[in-house]
Length: 286
Image (cartoon, rainbow, N blue to C red):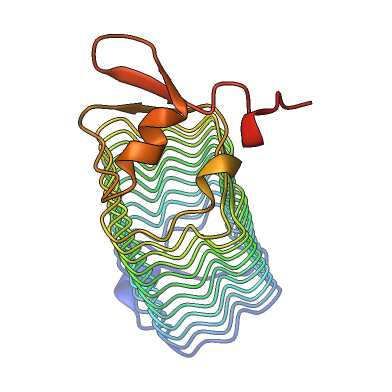
């Protein structure tokens, strides 16, 4: 193992530690701006409150690392392993996390504005209140990720796997979710104003009280979706006959197509209805 000394008592910024074994090292509060740590092993390392602006951590192992409140703006974390790492409160704005492994990572309140998370593996991660405005998550794996109260305004989640993801009260205005898979996701109270979900698959998705004003669902697959109390003002909907077993209530704002919706629905309760109960085009689904 390399002798790093006490990083809190010196300035190792710009240091080349590429490929070094730094497991368990304490870099808490250290200045590592521009440091070269590509391929380094930082498993279980302490990096809380450290500054790693522009640092190169390409392919680095940061599993179980403590990176709370670290500054990683513009850092390179392409294919880095951050499984079970703690990133709560950290700043990863404009960082490159493409193809990174963030399984079960804790990143509550973490900032990812403008970051590249394309093809990243975020399964089981906790992104509660994280800020991902303008981030790119093309074909990212967000299965069972927690994104309650997260901000994804203008983010690109095209082709992402959002299976079982919790996005309760998340804000995704103007976001792109084209061809995303949202099976069994919870978006209760989510703000999807102006979002594009063309060719996305929504199966068993809970959109109770969600705001879909000006959203584009013209080619979206809706099957067993809950739209109780949802707002669909100026929403581009797919053909009503193609929407299968969609639950809605008196509080759902269908913006002008309620009559046809009502004709195709059965009443489940005093204020609850089920659209196309026999499946698409009135035919049971296989």
